Image (tube, one colour):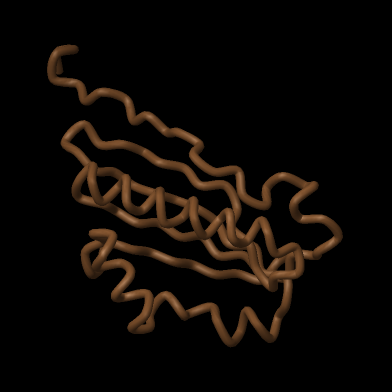
Length: 131
């Protein structure tokens, strides 16, 4: 394989720090975590996704008593346009986690995903309890 046929390396960019900053977490204990990944087909959809997460991140940062918070958000841009957005969710209340962990499957999130440009089936979310 010649060097001209190699794909360019992925560029991973940190776009939001979220509660990964210990000062933002404060004394809250993480009881569960979620890892979310959205695959976006266009640069416009990628921009809308980052903007939506940024607005939500600012809202959560202003609520230090929230039962959950975003963790660091990373973007890997595709040379063909679009890319992947990956971020974590820190959950601080087990009952809230059990009630809301699958909210992303509901119609409200479905409508939000459609407005952003996240195609059906282009998101992955996994959950686990913290040790």
